[in-house]
Amino acid sequence: MSTATDGGSSRTCVLVLAAGAPWESAALPALSSRPGIVVLKRCVDVTDLMAAATTGEAGVAVLSLDVPGLDTAAVDHLRRHGIEPVAVLADPGREDLRDRLHRLGMTFAIGTSQMAHLPDAVLAAASADRQESVPTRAGPAVGPGRGRTVVVWGPTGAPGRTTIALAVAGEMARRGAAPLVLDVDPWGGSVGQHLGMLEEVSGLLACARMSTSGDLPGAYVGLQRRVAGLRVVTGLPRADRWVEVRTGVVEQLIDLGRRQGEVVVDTGFALEEDINAELAGRPGRNTMTHEAIGLADDLVVVGSADPVGLSRLARGLVELREVTGGRPVHVVVNRMRSSLGWSEADVAGMLGGFAELAGLHFLPDDRATTDRALLAGRTLGELGESTLSRAVSGLVDGLRPGTGRVSKRRLRS
Image (cartoon, rainbow, N blue to C red; front, side):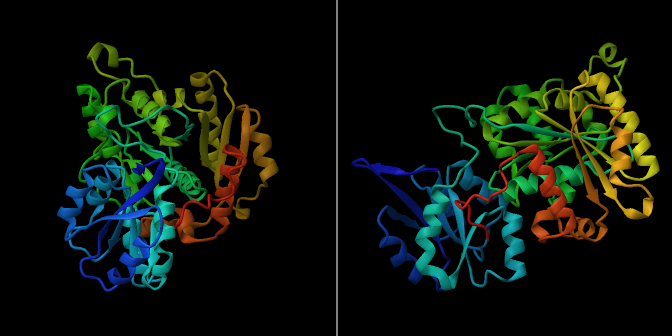
């Protein structure tokens, strides 16, 4: 986050774009009266805001959501230049405004009736734990590595890999992280669709092209979409385009992502080696999945609780053991329900013979919550408390012990 230093004391420079909104007359005196905050410029439109952002002097932008041209590209432009946006809302309780914040990927917001607290929101945004760095002339777009990688895999049959991956990432975001979600499913990724994102450009293919030219480290942050506290690299627009992702791209994406913070990877279902790949001079279709599994700090295996799903899960654990050398895995039994006729203890006894378990977690069959999340393009945690969200919280407790408390430094709309 950009801050200016003058005589040993730091100050936060602010850009304001109100577009004539009535709250501007109260916002400017409130900001100017707080020591350490300097209103750098009152911008007339989004174009003026974008130009002011490129100077590298500002650290926060206070914005009206009614400004024409304010979209995700504009918000991404601000963040690429080290500026965290703070939205001013006429009514923070309105669902349409909250949904717009969600679509723009904005974290900080304040109501027009709370202008006296606007300086507090600005300083919180300026000091937020930004996991990502921004491109500068002095170096690459990402810093030294410190994050861990959670890779979500599961056998065929739609056991819920993407749902679990986004639920884990969403819970991490709720606890104050800014996780990166990578969709590297070579058979048909759907992370973008789950989040209600228009996939006009595939993040994965754009990263693959940048990797080939050697420009990926400097461009990586700009290729990530931001929504609901997550940073997202969307997957393949069509399954047949997996051939465009060469060997090593996923490894590079994960390595760069770790330098930003936590990484959650959604993979494909298949593990078979392509014996014709070497002769054809191309990577095997499942190479992306193998690379992700090989780099996992925590490997989460998802299976459904019905008889077919458990049978596939058992076979999948055996197949996975041959790939990983028998490393411990976190197993998630999804859609657990009493009508199946067996208990959690019964399932645990069966699975224990197929893999060494680092953890065994059961998620209830909460179709109403998952349907609402998918239709609204939201993560489970955004929908509020539910039996499923509580179970996901327990799963993240097992993956990241001691992270249950939400950071007070992050203000959420």
